[in-house]
Amino acid sequence: MKIAVIDDGICLNTAFYVKRLLFDMEYMDEKIQKRISPTLPDSHGTIVGDIIQSYEETVCIGSVKTVWHETGGSPQALAAAIMWCADYGVDVIHMSLGTMEWQDFIVIDHAVRTVSPQISLIAAGENFGQFSAPASLPSVWSVSSFRLKKRLHVMKKESGAYDICADLKIPNKLRRKYGLHMGWSNSYQAAAVTGCLARENLFSVASDNTKRLQSVLKQYTEKRNADDIFPRRISSCEEDEKEIFQIPVVWVRYENGRKYVSRDVVSFLNFFHNLGYYAVSLQDIQPDDSVRRSFFENYCIKIRKEDIEKLLTCYLCDILIVFSEKEPLDGADSLLAASEQRLEFYDLQEKTLLSVQQIRPNENWAYPAGNMILAGYLGEIHKQGEESST
Image 1: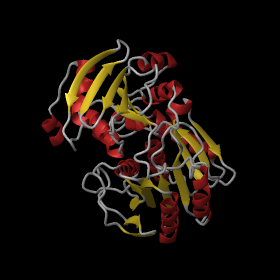
Image 2 (image 1 turned 30 degrees about the horizontal axis):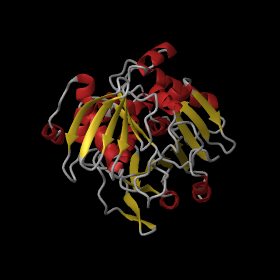
Image 3 (image 1 turned 120 degrees about the horizontal axis):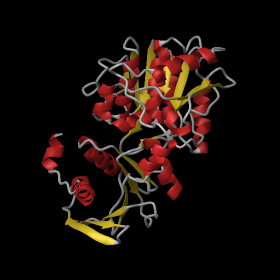
């Protein structure tokens, strides 16, 4: 089986399971061509490819890069990739991405309608349950994580595709490599479902087999004894509520000319992940004024306390980092104020300044900022050199 992964590229040098690619393309100069731009180690697409291959090692995976770390992606890039993959002759087109911008739906829907019925399209739903394309389109299989609805379900769409909510397990090898929180993201759950359906040959025989499809997904959900399967973290609503209040919420606010860039989020998350903490982020500001909201980087227009609580319930992470230029909400525990020259870390509950640190121009301030956060909560300090080598 041939599966195309449309994402931000697959890095073979760091992939765990994916050892070769059927094709390695990218969207450049308004067309799909052989990839020449670099792909980040442990990119989103690399993780997606690894999960698919971990479920079915015999599938052939091809990659089309349509998302860039600096600018995100565009609906035109996604549409071009869909049509190129269909012309190439793959069996499945996998997309762990999407857009909530309604003006983008027309472009993507047009591309989806050109795909032959013999080719299955599968996409991750938006992580907070909102309508998104391509997942919400009638002919696209859509996947969401069990963490949102707390139950397995398989519902047939009018076109023969399915809407799936699943709790398939992520192999321990990948969980240790990329972080435990990955199992609760729609994008990674969609990859697991794609691999599972490919393994069981359910894409080609899915019509009028809702019960069989649900039965197979349930079997993979309930596998607990294999080395590659980890147990479900959430066991009850009561435990959810207890854990929510124990998760630190750090509000990061930009002041005095500091500009928000996407790599700030990545650097922060990597800092904590490299130390074994599982951090997730929420933001309501754009990378810069010239780049509109992309289909891959979804931002809240206005962060509410309910958004924070919902994210904490979904991820059961070790720390939530909120990037916003607005005043912190009551749900935040601490504030990291970042300017061009200094960092200030406040305890919002006690209304006290915990620490201040000067930073040099062009310094990767995620390291000193991360250390300030860890010192404030745990009294721990980690050297930048150690993290760089990690």
